[in-house]
Each structure stands twice: as C-alpha cells, then as structure tokens.
Image (tube, rainbow, N blue to C red; front, top):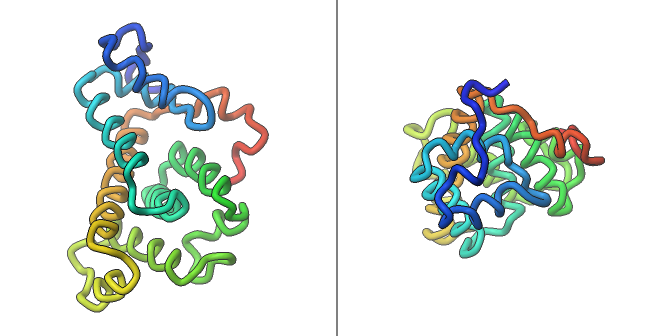
Length: 185
C-alpha cells in the first residue's frame, strides 16, 4: 500500500487534466504514481511535463531511452519502473530475454551503441564522479552533445522516479498486472 493516499484527477487544477490522461491511460498507465505525485500539482506539472516534452522532441530513439531507463531502474532496484519500462523496451523489438539480461556483460541483440548507453546509465547511477575522459570520447563518437545531455537527464530523472516510487511504496496498477505481457521482466 502506498505511503500517501492516492488522489484523482478531479483534485488537480483543470489545466493539468490532459497531462493526467497522458500518464494514466493506455500502454503507459502510471495511475498509482500519478495519484501520489498529484499531491504536489506544481511537481506533477513540471516532472510529467518534462517527460512529455522530452518524448516529443527527443534526439534519441525510444529504444535507447528505454535501455537507459531499464538499466537505471534495475540498478536502483525499483520494481515499479522495471516492470513498466521493461514492457516498453520489449515493444521496441527487444526480446524479453535481452531485457532480463540487460545488466549482464553481453546482452543478446544489443548493438555496440546500445551497450554504450547501458554502460553510461550504469556509470551515472554507480559513480558519476568517476567517468573518465576516454568514456566521454567514446560517447562523442556515437552521440551529439545534445544526445549526451538528454541521456544524462533521462537517467537522472529516472533515478528521481525510482526514489519516489520506492520511498512512497507505489503499488503496481491492477490493469498492468492483468495485462498479458506484464511481469516478464
């Protein structure tokens, strides 16, 4: 059970109803997280607004973003985010076996660029202060500075959501648990 009582869309200002709908319907049903986050309408607006803006204007593919998010969530041991984003990563065409093995040294189906994204996310979570120039040189060989910034922000934002979900014990949505592809991760 969540450590804060969930509140509904009706408790949010009308201007945030569309944003609520984007995070509580369809394949991206984060209703329980949204219900907790809605206690702070300003935070709800800015965090979810940032996610929407980054999705709409990202210079990174959805697959690369989801690799970074699943890696971050697994390292931070956030079952809520691992479950939701593993399914999203599988929808990009990656087999479930590869998603499960994402932290292994060799991941079936990963390109060198995808392994680089995974490794960067791991470094950002485990020791961001110790990422050497050589690793950044390798990032620059594959990504623009805009992409490196976006990837760094995505991992940091994911870590924030991991902390939020775990600290407040956000439960998985019933609709997600009943989905045929739920729980594969």
